Image (cartoon, rainbow, N blue to C red; front, side, top):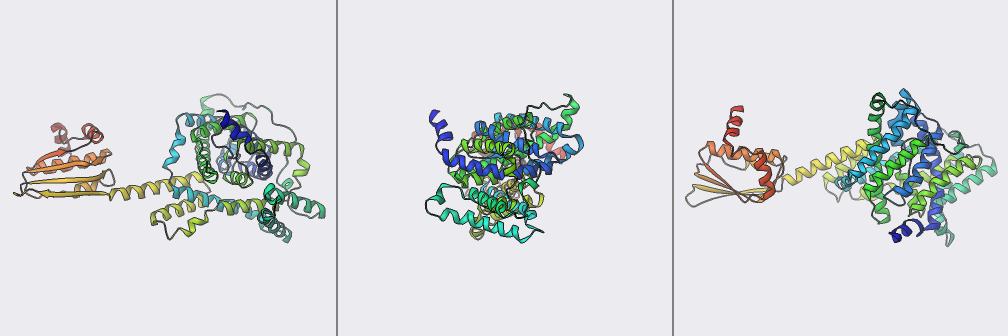
Length: 496
């Protein structure tokens, strides 16, 4: 326990602190932008980002992952804020946290194992595209100075690490932000800055209990929003945790992360903030800047609140072009370029799942819908593939009066029709033996198929014997099958 605590907090102190500064600087304009999307004051997003980052550093299950106010969550709040106001948003944020904690205790984080690699790749690629697209407003209808600063920022980010010695000591995104801010202030150039995004808060957050009536009517208003926020928040957090797991080659506790996200959102709601979740862009900035432990997440939150409250005059001078350069670096680093090279190598079904996930996420700007469609497609392709791994061999005795059908494979909804069609009901036989030693029945559709096969043979006057059924298959067949229940067979035949 002590070893784990030291590893998570103090094994990478310098890099974690420097990465925290970079993440905090990049969080400020995004938190403001997401607040504007949700239709609330910029303080709501900034306070939420501070609180969520600090709390999740202690309660989360994935060290080094950054959680804060996000665009995916902000989009779900628009209608609630417009129709009912900020107080109902804070109440929905608290309920979101409660639902996420319940999800953690129900171990819903374990469901991530059902998300295929192709869906994760599609999610990552779509998010990279969305991150890049989000920078385009800062690069359209602007002066040449913006393009020059952005190009210079990218040059610093990619070339500074090549410098011997110092290049490995300081994160290049931090150098980019500091250098471009100093240049902009020195030459007094008229360029869009963080201060132009919105007013920064000048006070620390205070405890706020939502001023809403504690009635069933209030619950009916906030529950649909809270449920949507909880699902999207957990989905994005679980996907981000999986990606950070791969980047750092370390495991994480997904169920603890669910609970941690819930506790963090409750804290955000009590400090006047909006609901949030893990941010893949900021998490990758953190990892690329050397952040690995919980200290990087904690320092990001603390540096954020210190910067906006006490150093607001300086922070407001940061050119947006510098942050755009950082986010373009994130988009380039996030995109799985191998997935393009592997299009010729991977199976067609895998490529379809990946591409469709990308298209749906980019088209809807809703990560949950894209992942849902991807998982559904992957499940359909898998079911179709497994359905083909079923073989039924028929072998008759010398007198041609008895035939043994040997069934090998999985019988379920996708292979049930193939199972029925493999039997010849018109063959004149005295007895049919169905050998299920190497087969397994999974659902009521497969049981129904077995019933129909047995009943059809018996209607033709053929004796049917079933042998070799395993215990699990026997349980579901005994419970739902009707071929050995005369009364049920009569009902079934009467229905036809």
